[in-house]
Length: 184
Image (cartoon, rainbow, N blue to C red):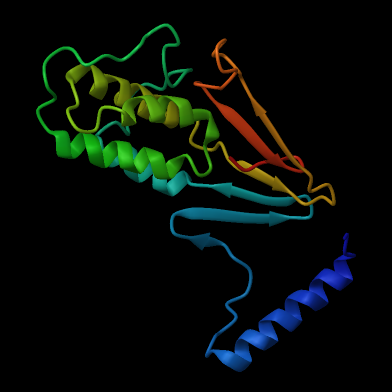
């Protein structure tokens, strides 16, 4: 079922009215900032970004003055459970957790963050170097945002790379779109 914009607005107003009957709520107007997500509305849709949140991570990691780089990870470089342990696993876990939250609006770093997340229990110096590389990439791409376009095409499409010859299952990744919007 496709609703016109007027029908959608009426439906939203009815929903808000029903909520007000049941709960004490206050309409604060259009969303601009929520839990580190910056929201900009336009006729084309929504732009979600986390510029302030990303800057805060860089400051906490003492990389706000670092030189940006073009990629979040070296493709041919595989992280392994070898080498000296990182001196502060708590700092490592905190930064990786922050990067995981940043992936809400930054699907471009998801693979790299997933890779460093696999070493949370015993991070090595080489793993922390990989985290610093991701952060230097984020520094150079601070203003990247996620565009959620408003369209009437809300079909769900999924794509994966079936790279396991025995099972045809993906071990590397997938992308799920709702309409033209990447949602996972």
